[in-house]
Length: 448
Ligand code: ATP
Image (cartoon, rainbow, N blue to C red; front, side, top):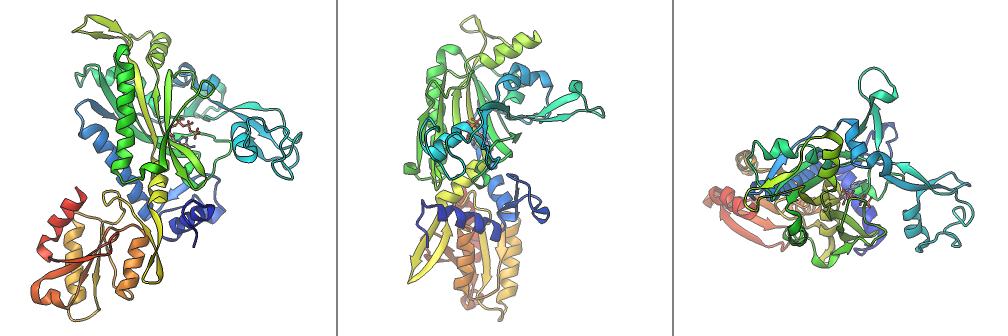
């Protein structure tokens, strides 16, 4: 069995995801399409639970953030103004020998481990002098709006959800009678024509972002930046992600995006190394100033109390729903020895687990399946359940451990006598007995 933290762990997670219906390659029966992924029955539940949890934390539970769902296709000028048409590029190099393409910065990092890839022999083929000069490659996907495929009809698939928020600043603030500081949150698809996608759902060409843009008085930027860094790290800690597996990485001068005054990534130690899965950025007044300039629409804010007019600064928290899903899977994945046998378990927080409770009749007779099916139907109205009557109970537990189900309920011979059931906890593997009619409330409390 592989130890967590090795590449084998990643292979095992990818294979488990496929086998158990979490994630599989898109259009697989046609041979697949590189770097696009389909979320299966358990994957869609997991990712949706993560998104719902994010949405509730970032909007419902706060009194200073509104939600939004902007269109993926936007006016093409938005992307000129934002700087994406001119600058959303990665440096691309080709290996002259095998024709493979690489992102220069990733090549440096992964193949040579040095800022200069020249002079290092990375592999037989990709060696010194075998690469073309780097050229800039724009990551935005283009398509055409309407029947005529010409330059005038080019539109872009959004590479980030953030711009949909900036252009709707007034549309949200005015009807909701918001005052700065306040935020706008959005979850949605984004598309990037990544040069070298990979590491499963870590880097794909179609993915989902969970972004929140917080509009503030420029003089308060340091305070809000620190506040959001802490809030976002705490969100993952609250989901049970191990602290020692996360760290902040501050962007140095060479990494800082053109719009940012300061930027921190939250990184996770994946089996393939420390990598970003969320960014917290101080975007200053760059975005609103640019859109104001380009459209002539006044995007300034007048503070009634201080009688000062300003273009709000923006503190952005930008998370990937797919990368967060991967963090939860990788962080929760364990191989544990139990009574001389290995069990695979994903220790997902019960709130995001795809299946909340599994229902088993101990044996398929003596009225146990009927009672179990009735209990399943009752619980199903509120929770995602799974009914299983195949094989020994121990095996059924293992199957549920592997997909992260926090609770398994068994109907046995005692149930007919006193209407109680056993509940087995995924992590401690301990069992308690509870009256059946208290089960829904018990689960409610556990999942609150
Ligand atoms: P990277 O350096 O890994 O390319 P980035 O700095 O370009 O990421 P941002 O533009 O800050 O990423 O995007 C915010 C978040 O969106 C990232 O932290 C990540 O979770 C997610 N994200 C970005 N690109 C991808 C991708 N190609 N596939 C999956 N998620 C992505």
